[in-house]
Amino acid sequence: MTAQQLSLSRPAAPAHSGGMWLGFAGVAVFSQTLPFTRMAVAELDPTFVALARAVIAALLALALLGWRGALKPARRPRGGQWWRLAVTALGVVVGFPLFSSLAMREVHASHGAIITGLLPLTTAVFAAWFGRERPSSGFWLSALAGSALVVSFALWQGAGGLQHADWLLFAAMLLGALGYAEGGKLSRELGGLETISWALVISLPVLLPVVGWLGQEHAAAITAASPRAWVGMAYVSVFSMFIGFLFWYAGLAKGGVARVGQIQLLQPFLTLAGGALILGEHLDAPTLAFAVAVIAVVALGRRAAVHNAAPKNN
Image (cartoon, rainbow, N blue to C red; front, side):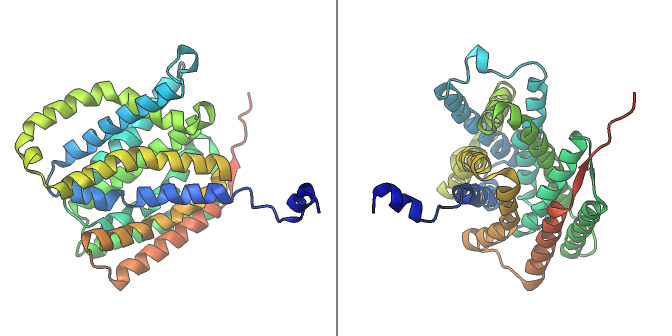
């Protein structure tokens, strides 16, 4: 039998399998953001952690853009793309890191995992809004059910009232969803890696002086921070803000957005596991039950139909 016949007789690997593994690697990286953030903010100022991690990631992104030749004038974003990059940066470079860092000073990573578990569904809401699409009634029912579950969990953990950290996590989720939705739409034009890299780079001139000032204000705490705190800082800077996106966008490109995107449903469970293993957080049955319920609702919502809006008559 010839080599050609042998190659034809072997079953072909699924075209999306590599994309699924790359996507899973990205989600696994993202899922540990809250545990490592909590590790860092235990000793470092939350605002410093949130903005300094963006500065570090922006320097890595600048190097990546230079290596790929994307800094050349012909390959730079144009016109309105800069404003859309600013919206993306507001959400995923500043908004989600800042508010989640502030929240991790007050609640466990497991608590944050449940609240932000609706991020994929919230992102879909913003994507439908920006795309002028009409989600089906099933989609909206899933969104309402998921929101009710998350608020119920927050009330249960807050002894009947919402904690200050819950509002911070809600803000992080909304801004993160905004950034993911706008960035996802823009990545169709610029490419996924270029979109997140440029979003980081355009934030650098604003964030660098702020981080410098925060460094001076909290110099004593920074110099006294333990290696454990710096490990948390290093993770959220290099992995959460940069390397995770490399895996994630490569997976989306290879395996398809719809298929690979479903891996996000595993993220809250991986965060719960990380909180338990890294921080020693206790996992109780009600928390796991809420996690399962929220992810089930998100899965149903992502499968619900979204229709294109009818064009307006002139």
